[in-house]
Length: 459
Image (cartoon, rainbow, N blue to C red; front, top):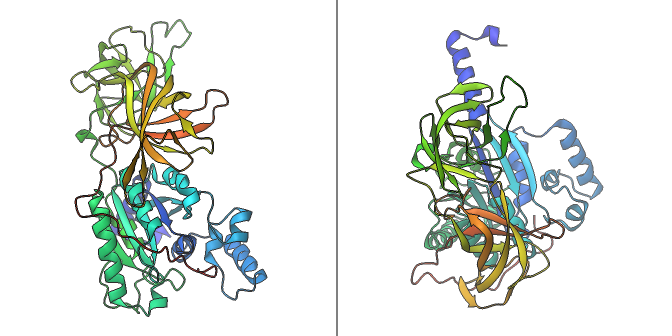
């Protein structure tokens, strides 16, 4: 109890609580079928004491009913009935857990090529991606595909987890060769940071606790790296972007002249007195007040939700974007972007869609599909005519109204958009404005492999 702690210990405990409340890491796992993603996630949750007793009891019961002596930790994340029956991950499974050092939002994404679009969904907001490799098979085509998706989505940190080291006698040369091959390939794509960790998710080696079987490895465990990797960016380094979500007009005599603009700051810092431009109209004004959850403040930053008041009575509505007048993005109706098609129905030239960018939704038409990306070797297939489910390619769109788009490599929030079916509201495609994919450097052509999938009895 806190009453038994010294004042210094109480202060330290309070500091830990504040850190856990403010530090959060969103990360995604990916890998080929049977590489052990769900087992890794289950081990991470189990060994970090993030599993409730009734959950563990249910997993133990399900494992015994399948003839397994030890609990199958993969069942902690494979929540769909089809996943448990087939032993694979199909949907993106989100898990929330915390340690004394940090809170985590984990997206366990599928490994099969058929569900590449699910990895795009899970990694689109991730700050870190854990890519698993079976130590017996090494880097395969799906490994390179996941590295390419991480690069495409500008995930800042990538962890290569070489799993099943127990099945290769914990051999350092096996790990070193896989780490060298993957690091060279991912670095050629422009992945800024790569950390390789040898693990055995089934045995628990280097997941939460250091392995006694790999004394040749002196780096962090998976959890240690997740707890220490830098998260977030300095908001002052990014230009401010404020998409208007709601216009507040109280219908009372006391607030008859009040007009506030509510929303979440997408990036940067806003201050009282800042000159701002309203896009797409181009009108300008000055911030006169910032209301942060009922408290008037002089400054606010992303990702805070605030209400702004301006010096001038302008025609502003949901979907408009407020930006510093000296760093406002250009508006355009012609959009060139890299997209990942998510729907089973193909995307074709001439299709009419809705384009949703931040809080703004406009009509658009697909003018051209110049190329489709082959993730296996990063070649561009010209003029494919359409994009099928899981395809990544370049598109050219024409919108009915101007949009204030940033390039995706400059801002993941204001450089991304969705294409929606205007008939039923189904999400069709995820888009990244600008040329958001960097081809590999010369001489870094992807190595070929014979796919060496793990057996049906892999972990």
